[in-house]
Length: 275
Image (cartoon, rainbow, N blue to C red; front, side):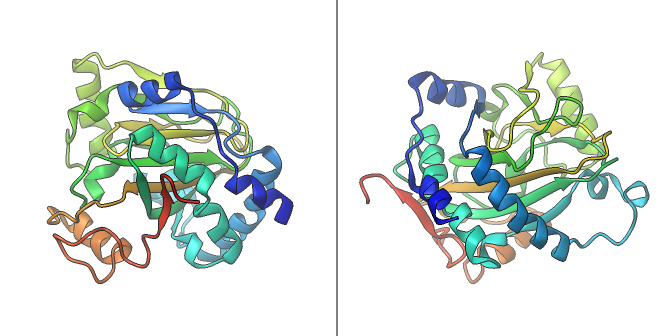
């Protein structure tokens, strides 16, 4: 494991084309961000914690749309020393900073998203409606821990939608899927899906990028780990919804609007020029 962990400190070289694609489209696919061996090693740790903290007590078919979408467990890095190494990896954080064009990034929070066999689709939504952050410099790394074949499905992005900022305050639901789906169609916004992904591949998308994901018709769990980064120096905004109030209390404990988004749960994980 120690040899594999050295990979977490190794540099991932981004091309100018990849950076430009992210900034213009609001998303980018990057192969082999983690090696298959590294992804497999951490899949075991992450799966154990996800199953331990799975809050669902009903079969998939008896849940609402949000509940059908995935098993969701956040801030795993605070529960396991090995997972902490993964989530705070310089390799991933540097990619996030370079794509956004900022000098430093902090963890906003991590989140395991496991789509169960028979799990439902993830409706169209914008992540950032949940976040009380006064910046557009937010980004999510979405990394499968197991191979994701075409029939299971990866995320679909509405290209360029991050430039529009806030579009709808509807949280992930049937209503968000309808409202944002109609918006995408009316505005003729191109949709991109990167298809099958190997364990350790990753997509990065901006906080305002509209995105969705299909259901899982197979008998295999789609195991994904996500890490949300925010630019260092970001100020906390006044919460504009109960969801944002909840996020403020959960992911930015002890802080208030006007404070820097830098609680003990938001460590600085990359700073340009630091060693």
